[in-house]
Length: 165
Image (cartoon, rainbow, N blue to C red; front, side, top):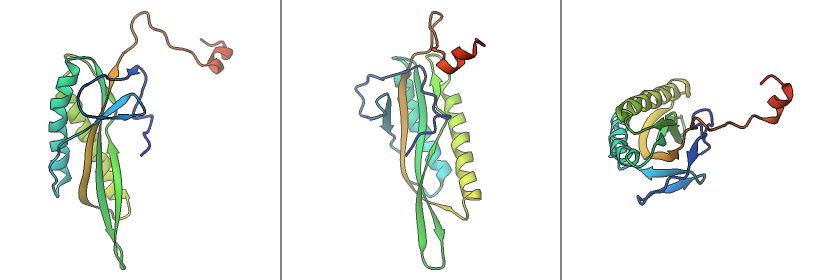
């Protein structure tokens, strides 16, 4: 599944070194599978995923600032006169930096609200799709290295030629 770059700004991201079991997303982001109990209510699934990710994020942020994004895979169904049609849909929270001292609960609340809104919009505007079952929950994490005071941003050639900077 393709990542929407508007939701996942990868600037200031480096490879996260960790001994925890994970897989890699495009070389930088590590994807950690979350232990989430299956349920018929996706609100409970979201709550379980957030609870599971809170522990992991607290552990990772002690070592280094990170950028994190919650990913939830759900299956929806739509009943047609002939059959029950299934479709898997992946929902992602906005990728946000989390620094030492940040309130991780605030990040998790924003992730819940954002994913919950995406799901309800999909059901409302998705031509009759209804929640069927839970597939997977991951949290994608990368080491975050914000620009320091001496850092610089490379200006694209097109803007340099405009002589407006």
